[in-house]
Length: 153
Image (cartoon, rainbow, N blue to C red; front, side, top):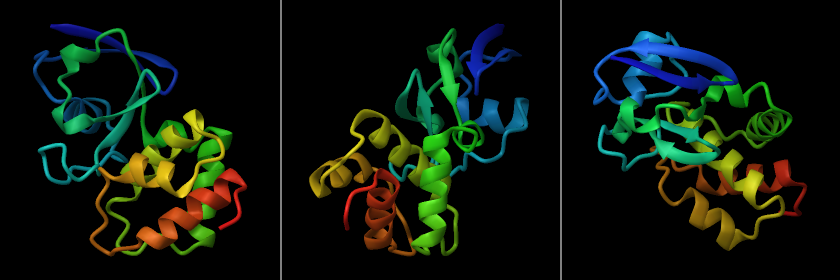
């Protein structure tokens, strides 16, 4: 079955089972490998993308559920000014270690800053609560989000 959606501003059509997870459509069918597989249960946040501007777990979102939606991946986020600010802050704050969770972390941070341009610590904690980092760089993640938002740490 053909499923129509917009990925990073580009109209796409994917002929696949509508129950196939968005994660695998992105990685296998559209060759967009920036979105990572983590736990497969929507608990770690490594697969976070935006669906119509809201963060969503791509491993738990069936492609049929997002037909007609606008999907933004880490590749699309990198092209936006806010995404570039976040990525620069990530590097400046030495956030990445193993790097595996970073795409999902950045996507959640971008959704937060799009909704709350000057977040408080509580805003950051709430927005990032579903993203796990095995390297435990949470303090640096918070600092990077504040730097990208222009908020004093």
